[in-house]
Image 1 (spheres, rainbow, N blue to C red):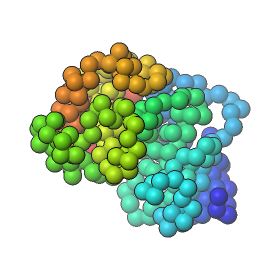
Image 2: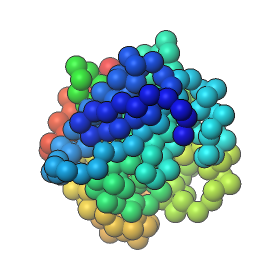
Image 3: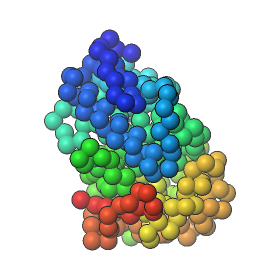
Image 4: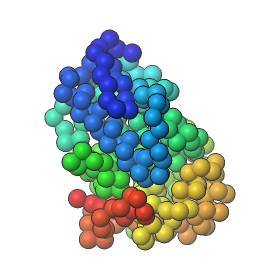
Length: 270
């Protein structure tokens, strides 16, 4: 942990080598996440709970010098602490921390033990949501976040099987199984697009058609058998998800409407 000033907010305690203004901005984003997470999963804000721990580095070089996660990681959660850095001069300098703070809330607040694809999917979903007026809008897509900025590079052909063979996307069966760490390390952008898009799809497709099943699935083991029991046959869902991903990747804002996380939220594109 770096030597630096400590800061506190209602639910967080941060050690930071970033500036006070940068640190307060990240804490505000974390608090917005906390509020949105409680609302999305209908959880109570329990008084007296220990504050969540954050470490914020002033820049990427500092973070990399202290990184204890994968070499490609831009942030990570190593219980009980989230580690990230502040990027100056970008539209969204806190999305890495919001991503990792979602992992933290999954573990510490909701007390989940989710499958890899669920855990990363939820973190990517909240981390890629827009922060406006001090509120995080789950499902409202922020183009200046990871992995959203890679959507335009997918080059989808319209044929899901061809795109799977070409390595443009990860098959849902592979994504859910999550047992090929070497493949993940080679194609982490494709995996994270898969995690994010599948989660967004399950929350928002056809006015939240699969949202209730997904909420139940979050507390299951997240296996393929659980998925098919809660959601449907993997072949059918893959076709629907692929078409959904095509629409989102194309930036077709006309197909989407305002999100409403208290019920079954719908996706929003800028």
